[in-house]
Amino acid sequence: MGPRSHSSLTMGLILELTRNIGRENARMHAGERLQKFAGIEIEGRTLGVVGLGKLAPRFRARKAFGMNVIAWSPN
View (cartoon, rainbow, N blue to C red):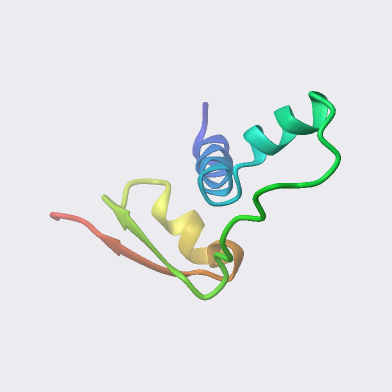
């Protein structure tokens, strides 16, 4: 898996945590008609990235979904 795949996976996990996409998908497939949980808005929130590595510059470059991105590294 390259850095591009890692950044996409990380954004997917952030969306799952804030929007519960997996749970809502399972509810829909179980026959529920209405969405129960809309989630929280992430635009304008701050995303902290610990350890710069190859992943942080990708987040910083695209400002991950309108989020403020800050990064920290011990180096």
